[in-house]
Image (cartoon, rainbow, N blue to C red; front, side, top):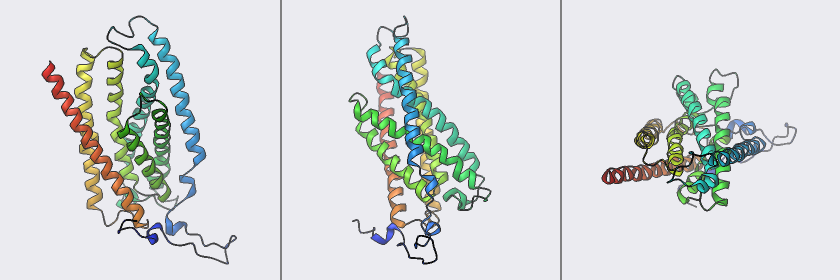
Length: 292
């Protein structure tokens, strides 16, 4: 194990309590975990719902590809049919969670710091819904999409991308950690806002695959995507990390230190990945300018 991690970081040991029905002391308040915030049943249902959207998109795209004018001369109908459904699902997911993420951020910026960094334990707390139950639904949409998309990437070589697989695995883990220990609702909210750039990324893919690489639409979408990526995944994400650093003494109160460190490392790794992608986006933009 790393030097900064020790078994005691996993949390307090279970204590026996002769007065409780099962003889075990209730450790919920000490560990900060409530089972209703992690439901495998709900996750599986949500994964299945995304799969329904995927299958429906496959039928719709196949029908569209048979229509004259949908796929231009430079397009690839087989690519649209094979890969398009995953991009359609990604588009709707990004649109949905970005909208909810901005709503969460707007709400939580008005909350006290304690509710921004930890979900209140008391359901009667005025900030319980904003930092807990409302974000739970967005987290469910997010992690179920990642699981569904990861499955398609692993099953389809054309969709498989090592960086994306690592990204998905990392944030699936972060999602379950945050939900299980009921902390960092505001960071989750600004993090999910980064999906805003994915909306235009999917539109860009659709334009390329359908043969519209040299259209006015593409000349608008590409710089807009680059700008949105920089705003959401570089500047916004960076500001969120700065906020965590500024309040580092309060981050993870009541949460095992090993869990907090692991999550913060995941967030830093995600930011490094975003910076790497930003560099590639800038390089592609410069290359396109030289060709023009």
